[in-house]
Each structure stands twice: as C-alpha cells, then as structure tokens.
Length: 131
Image (cartoon, rainbow, N blue to C red; front, side, top):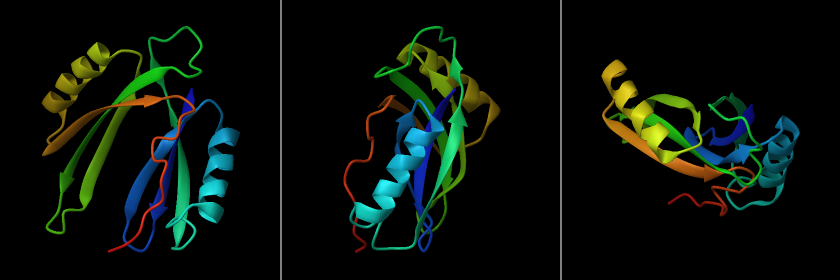
C-alpha cells in the first residue's frame, strides 16, 4: 500500500497531486511543509487528503520505483475537472495501458491520462499563483 498526497485549493477547488509516498506519515509531513512554506499553498486556503493506493502485481520494494496510474475525468463549462476516477498503481506502462483500455470500456469520460510517478519524489514541486 502506498499513499497519494493531494492538496486542494479549497476556494477554487483545484487539486494538486504532490506525490506518492511509502508511508502515510511521509505524506502528512510533506503536506504540512507545503501548507506552511510553499508559495500558493501557504498563501491560500488549502487542505490536503491522503489516498491509500493499491499496487497491482508488485512483490518487491517500491522505494524510488516508477509507477503508473490512469485517471479519467470530464470537464464542465468552466473547464474544471469533474467525475474524476483513478486506477490502482501499476509497475509498468504496459499494465497501465491495459487498464486504461478496460476503464474506457467501463466508464464514460471525456479525458484520459496515463501518468508516471516515482515513489517518494515530489510530482508537483513548485507552488502556484492565481491569475
């Protein structure tokens, strides 16, 4: 089990996927750091959530390992992402593409992404500003 850290700007309902971590404590520590120190996250009303993530067919250490995840979503008139669904984590891009095809058959979404993240690496490293 790994933990996906998502920080949300609550005022504009924007999610930032910060990274995937081996322990919930690591994810919590990174979240607290971002909320106190990183531009945008410390300037606006932000909260975080930690989502437990299963890894499909993985029997070895995940430290510094690249993992793939599939995300599907729709967009509304304001171009906000809605109806977001995520897959489990996969140890190969090929597995993720197979899951993408399965999810496309099962769910109706307008947008699909297969994303690669490295365990323990900050996926969203910089802050943000509102325009």
